[in-house]
View 1 (cartoon, rainbow over the protein chains, first blue to last red):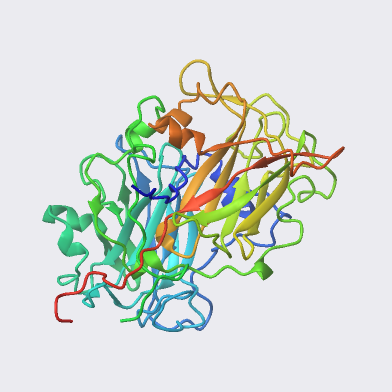
View 2 (cartoon, chains in turn cyan, yellow):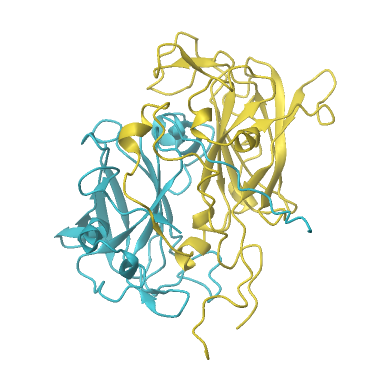
Length: 201
Length: 245
């Protein structure tokens, strides 16, 4: 038999408690190496679409709020086109789509200021409901966790990804709650009752 | 339907979750309350995982990949080393334009971080981070110092082997990966509960960088080679389509 000579993906290791040194040194207070931290905002002035602010925390299975979580977000523009390498064409030039967000060192709260993304097609052409993809790392997390933020005030009923969630009660864990005009709350629960849905995609 | 098997387009290979560390690994105590207990919702990638931001070489400063000099301009204390390798995908292709970011302790095993209170002193000339973007063939390199081992609160006497943290950002958000590089010959590797979150020895060996005397610079520095492999991309000619479409 011939050899199937694919390489194996490099195994993951935890980001550990000192992830800020590498990924957000300026926010940690290590200044002078990089002029700014990468991913400080997913939008620039002039980005089209509804401006929104999402606030939340990351909690562990004992109910403790993590102070050392780092989240990255990735989203489409208001028309549902991804910046970068979307094969369907160019996105809004004022939407970079990617942000790096850290939990506050004291309160553990994180905030994402962005615009609400449009609907993006699933591989079979059906549209996914507006969502922001998240990747979460922290001390004690051995492999980055994938989840998504959906929105309470959007029609989520026909999203083909949400349709895959067998336990319908858990769907609520992916939906940001509206707390005001353009503001939302999204708490991520790593373990236990109301555990957030995480994906393997 | 066009064939989409470019380096930066197309569905991602499925992740081998038996190769990666499990989420719940009691030897590493912090994982016990931070590991999801419910099954992951598994499905193929979508555009949200297959796309990603573009990183340009212009974002990177000249000294960003030189941890010996990038903090103050005066040299950091420690054993000078080159860390180099290629970023590949699972099909073995070199991947260009990958953002590679690293962070590490200083030569004494101390991090420049408000949460680190280890007895070893800070080095006034060592910040501890570096970044670069892979070249056309996926190659990358850093000049740094060998980080020290250090104790950490887990079991009574646990020590981290010498290691460098690495974050890689390929062309798709679903390829996002953080890992750690270890050094050939370090006796602490086999004893480390974080290393041992990985179940297969072959996977652990994939994180151990060999000494590379071909790349060492005589009378200047040693070198270690560390290739990084990202999730591959599938050819999608026959990708999930309903019959007749």
